[in-house]
Length: 145
Image 1: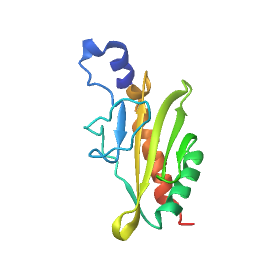
Image 2: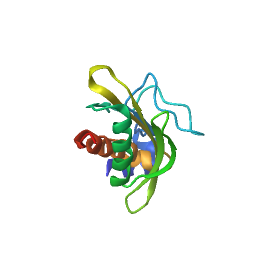
Image 3: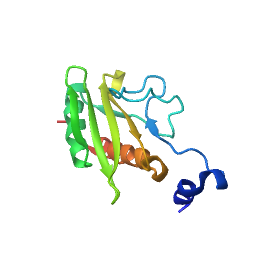
Image 4: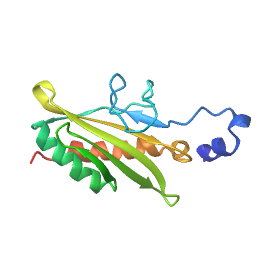
């Protein structure tokens, strides 16, 4: 309810700006093609996912889990182990863009980073963070193929 109040009267109630994007890696966030430059505040406390599988296998799992959370993959870079997806949320069908990147990572073998960004009402309703967290939870619970 507070989000709606902020949306309708932000200047009157002194609400903080909404989180427009969130990422697991604030120093080197996954890039959104043709998107705004990455924010440096990260917008929240998302943590990357570390899995004890090879990065190529984790990339395939990451693609599958994107579909399971309702994201539509619109661009893939299998060689770079990254993809861009679009998700919608709620009855307003608010759109969120996401980029997922999988990299080799020491003893864990693979690290999954995500960056999500939303425009319009989405940030006021928590859409970028909620969708990213739901996605990362699915990837974290996935198994190595």
